[in-house]
Each structure stands twice: as structure tokens, then as C-alpha cells.
Length: 453
Image (tube, rainbow, N blue to C red; front, side, top):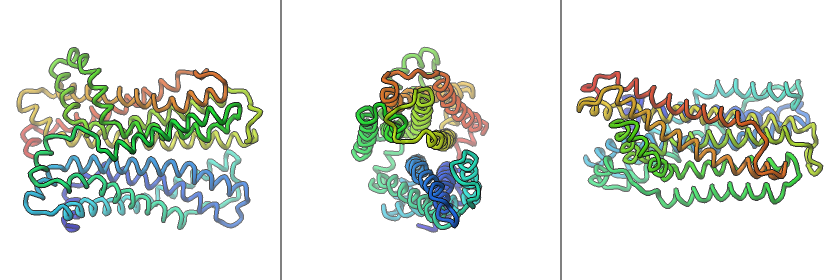
């Protein structure tokens, strides 16, 4: 089965692009920040610089690790679901559940090793840029030499490999548990309910996020920038919890928008609504990164905006000269996670839309025109963008409102709406451009040829 996995990778390279890019970009992020640990362990590093480097590596790198794990598992899930018919066919000709599972894990392992190996050079450069940024802001001494060694390589390669294999095991379990006949039926009928484990995990993440929000108000009133310790985490945990609930959220938003889409879009609107309802799990995979991007970016940027405009706090334990370091940390966090999430949005949506080439070909053979197909995909993108922006905004509230209360005593922050408009516009443009761009490329293939693939 491992040989079959290698041959599958060789002949279906395009089908693994989304998973590869997630692992590749994730490995770059993890290695770049882990390299700061190698730098901190180098010769001639003073205590202040060592503390800054270690904090940056553990705090920012730690959050990057959480998002990377989530992203890899998400793309692996999408990849396995898209190949449900292939898994069912293997079972129908005698493959055992263990053999199918081993093939999926083998594919993930090969992709992970390739992604981690190719990420080494870009990560080396990214880590060097991080060190230069810290030195340019006087947070790390200028004479410190950059290190990229055992910590960067072992953590980066290890995390990428374990995330890929773990994600493959998790996503393959449902496929391997089904019998051949049941698997063939499941290809055309999606599971409508979330699993119990996923529901429990989602509730747990939401509870952690709410707990961080409550602690921000209860413990850090008039403590100044100290409140970021819990407020900054709140939107990340809560957004992850909402992202795990994506199948439920997709159905809820679709129910609200179904009427307007059918009225305004006609046949294309009707097909868009039916597609979203029948392909909830696939749509949920595309919705997850939109929620993460909107929630984390909005929460972190508004938290820093509130801090910049708030008066100095007498109860803060952090000296004013260290505030710049924390501001830099916040911008690095939001920059890194937002860019990664934005790339994941594009990556996931392009993969999910390109996979539907056969579906688009069938629609054109029964009379749909290319503009109608594009209109249908565009309306599906509207549903995803609306859901992602709405629930991502809800995810950011658990950071923005508690931090505003702790720092200013007011629930609503006195901050410009421009930040929010910029984030929402970026999320919407990324979503629609990715969907329509991939669909436009997919329908360039003649309909007969697309159906025959």
C-alpha cells in the first residue's frame, strides 16, 4: 500500500497541492520562530536579548504551531473527502480498512517530508528577517549572530510530520470504518451531523476563549498592557472553536440567505443554495480559514489600537520601555497568522473549486452556460464570505470588548472602523477571487473532456 501511495502521489500531483502548501508554509513559520531558540542559545547573548528571543519563539511560535496544526488537519480532511470515491473503489476490490488507512498515512508522510525539506531555506531567511526586525527595534543587541540549528530543524520537521500523519489518521478513520457498500453510498450522501468528538472539541475551545475574556475583565482592570496576557488569547481560542462548528454555521447562514439568493440569482441562485446544503462538509472546510483570518486579525489589531490610545495605567507591571516590544510582538502575531490564514483561504478554496471540474462539465452538458456556472460559484462564495466575516467578527469580540473594559472602562472601543473595514474587505475579496478564479480555470476545459476525467 505504501507503493500505491507513492504512485498515487506521482499520478495525482495536483490533488495534493493544497495539503503540500499548508505543510510547506506551516514548516516555514514553525522553523523561523524555532530558530530564535537556536539564536538565544548562541555565544555572547546577553540576558535581556535571550529573554526576548525566547519569549518571541515560545509565544508567537506557539500560536503559530496551533494554527499550523489546525490548518494541516483541515486540508488533509478536505483531501480525503475529495477522494471518497477512490477509497470506496479500493474497498470494493478487496482492500482492507487497514490497507486503505496505511495508504492515506503513507501519502501524508511523503508529502510532509518533501514539504519540510523544501521549507528549510525559506525558513532560514525568514528567521534571519525576524532577528533583524528585533535588532532594528532595539529589543535584541546588534552584535548577536543568527543561529539556525537543531531546534529549528527538529521542531519544524517533527511538527510538520506529526501534524500531517496525525491529520491523515484522524481524517481516514471514517473512511476505513465503512464497508465497501456503505462507502460507495457515502460518496453521494454527506454526513449531516458533526461527530461527537468534534462537537466536544469545539465547545472546549469556545469555553477556553470565554474564560480568557472573563479573566481579562476580572483580573486586569487598570493593569494596562498586562491584560493582553489573556485578551490576546481569547479571540484565537474562540475563533478555532467557531471554525470547528463550521458545518453548523454554513447551514445557518445558508438558511438566512437562501431566499435572497434564489430571488436575485434565479437558476444560479437556486443551484448555489442546493450545492451548499448538499456539500456542507466541503464548504465547512473552506469556511474555517475565513473565520480564523477575520477573528484573529480583528481581535489583535483592535486590542493594540485600544492600547495605543488609552492613558497610561498605574497598575501595570510592565515598564513603559517594554511596551514597544509587546507592540512589535502583537504585530508579528497578527501579521504571521493573518498571512498564513489568508494563504490558507486561497489554498483551500482553489483546491475545493478545482475538484468540481467534473461537476461543472456535467452542468454545461445539460444546458448551463459558463456565465451561469460562474454566477453559481460566486453566490456560493458570497455565502462563505458572509459566514466567515460574521462568525470571525463574533470571535474577535471576546478580545475587543473585554480589553476595552479593562483599559478604558467602556465596552465599545473608541477606535477607527477603518481597521475592521479593511479586514472584512480583504476576507471577502480573497474568498470571491479564489472561488471565481479557480472556477474560471476549471470551465476552460471542454465539458465532454471534464466529465471524462
